Amino acid sequence: MTPARAVEAQLRLPLFEFVVLMAMLFALTAFSIDSMLPALPQIASELVPAAPNKAQLIIGSFVLGMGLGTFITGPLSDAFGRRRVILLGAGLYSIGAALAYVAPSLELIVAARLLQGLGVAGPRIAAMALVRDLYAGREMARIISVMMMVFVLVPAVAPLMGAAIINQFGWRSIFMAFVLFAAVISIWFGLRQPETLPAARRRPMDMRLLAAAAKEIMTHRLVALVTLVMALAFATLFATIATVQQIFDITYDRAEDFPAWFAFIALVAGTGNLLNARLVMRLGMRLMVIGIFGAQIVVSTVMVVLFSSGWMPDAAAFWAFLFWVCSVFFTAGLTLGNLNALALEPMGHIAGTAASVVSALATIGSVLIAVPIGLAFDGTPLPLMVGVLLCCLASLPIMLILPKADR
Image (tube, rainbow, N blue to C red):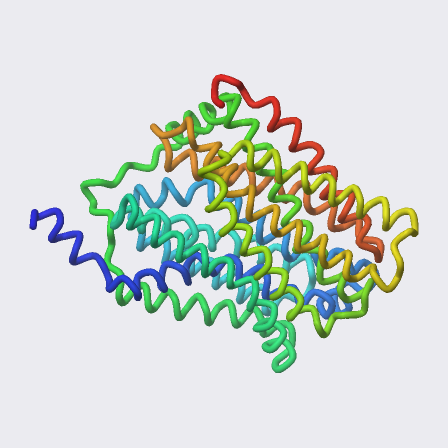
């Protein structure tokens, strides 16, 4: 065994423990979004009874903070090491959650959630870099696949867990659950996982290099166009997540059943990732994305026509909506990974920085699109359906005009 291999072996935890630990760091994001959904009606009735739609901003502000934090956490982890960024990010996340717990107004909770999102970007991005430090090729692909499976399963159980916590201790207790979750993961990580990026391999934090890389990314026609499509695709997902609880509650009077239904939706949607893994090698990333957006346009158009015309029978309305929501999450599973790969394909020479910049721009852009769609909720699913349809209609022609030289 070479000296380098011997050092690497010392840094590796037992594989099962390592995969579970990395998956928990990665899943912190999904848990922080989806477990909040059962709390939105109580938050709205207590803090903004005259404008209940504003409670959705608790979701949007977290995602916005995560997008902003993604800009710098990759370069920070390259400059100061993975452990420091993960632990400091988890600490900032916990401070945001604690501030949200004591915040007396929605505006202050939204600000605290923005801080929480900034913090979660540390574990989210640095954990992926840490995996790359220790593993490559098929080993890395296997570990990330398991991490993504956990990431898919978390949305299935998070609303159920959130509802149980809220029913037992009140809606503010969910923020303390975030603090506890982050503390357990941080202690586990701090005690067990050594630093994987030695000082000799670290790169100084240089904002000029980051700005130059961002300029290169956004002036590359293919990358810029695919990043725009990613923003639109993320917007359909985030707008649906932010609005779906209100529709279950207000439109269909199924608030008590919502966590169980959301678990069903998440599990059905998770099959999209599995199907994509089987089909993308045969059909290619672009064709997959074009075909799925085309299918979603057809489904959403039919739903918009049925719900806006009054042709949808009342007895079938909920089941039609449930089918449509599953299709939106299913679409995300079949498009987002492919879009990310397409955007990074020409950026191999600055892959790490490109991943941070593309993810940050797509996430921030998606919030700017998703928030107005969510706030347009009028007691029916129609505004959300129209918003998703418009995003897909805007995405499809962009995919069709991608530079031929890059096909």
